[in-house]
Image (cartoon, rainbow, N blue to C red; front, side, top):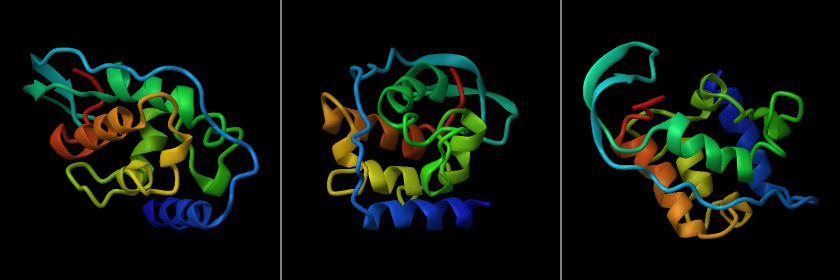
Length: 137
């Protein structure tokens, strides 16, 4: 399933988008908290997570990505409208995860991030790489 999403999103990187996806403002990560967190596998554990999908990343994806990458309009077969579907293009802890690569500066989807692109790109990278793609804090 990961490869299908990866191959599909790579095609998007090659194509020129006819419609711009964007809008909204960046979501600022909130302070570090400890306690129970939901891990990418769906289990819970204790730990410190400063950036989480529900509180920080979902608002960015909803504002800038879901218009083109949702369950009803999954361009390139990529749906970013839920945690489960987003995890199809994310490998927790890996900077080479598809979502990280396409949203980093120079990535094929970077220009579709609205507002402060660098901050949003950094937020997504931090969520995947530094926070293990945690679902929530």
